Length: 403
Image 1: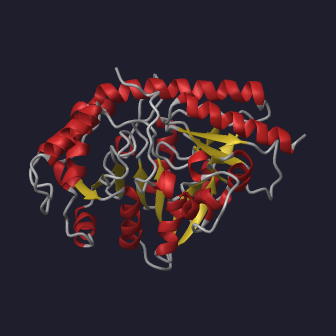
Image 2: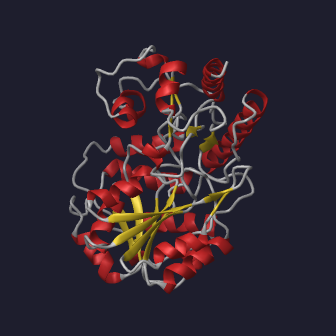
């Protein structure tokens, strides 16, 4: 029913993907020049989709626009909670009391605020590396030290928790908070009940706070089912869960996220620190609710298409770059690819592919904190024809370099 092969022109929309890549990837302005014009790049970098938003969501937004007034808006009744709760019950067999539900324009601003709320300047935060860069940025912004606990990886590219190292970090007398990614970005791991239980046991042993970022929980491969950390830590008051429909339904610009805070005092403090006074964007609220209410069929078809994209990538690498190492991730629409067989440790892979292949991507320790040297992250939430063009360019650039 839905056409995920459609190529949509996003130029001149002030999209970060098309118009903001110089600042985000290269920390540069318009003075930075490439051998490719901006509209010639294949963009496989930032984690938003190249798919059209579900028409059912667009219709809901249009209906709200037709009301023609966009005044100050909050979440004043239970209808949004009921929609989100039903989604959680249907997809994860989990729910939570309405009073625990708070809101933020996004999980990133929520992380910045929560680190400030929970941590003193001399306390420490623990993150697993490789890591989504903003986990570290939230600490740096608040002048709080973070400890890196590297994930372990086998020869096939499968990542696991290093529980011994993780506990060593948690045992630090200054440790206060764990920022945990479930499913994990960028590796795409869906943590098992056993793995989550092991993490939970350590966190509870040292009486730490834990923020579980579950933004990718609905972007899972066929046959998989997300396990919220809250299903494992059933009564632990120091757990905060972060979810949103924005990543799954390609509404990152309609910033809205669900922040589920069990502890009443922390919940009150989070709300009191809200710098936008508890208001929400009226279109963001409508879009998010519509995703949960009527986006289910689009969501299922999109996941099937994504699964096909991952199998396409895996086959391409095996045939064309056989020394590249990638495990099809259990979740996310992001491929985490080890290219260490083709590059030296000092090589800057995002710059190499931008200049030599006209492909925009992210990778390396600079963007993923650590444990990421010579890895690249590829966004596969786009028409397969774009992926093919990007991969062919990358192959040709790598083979030319190693000729």
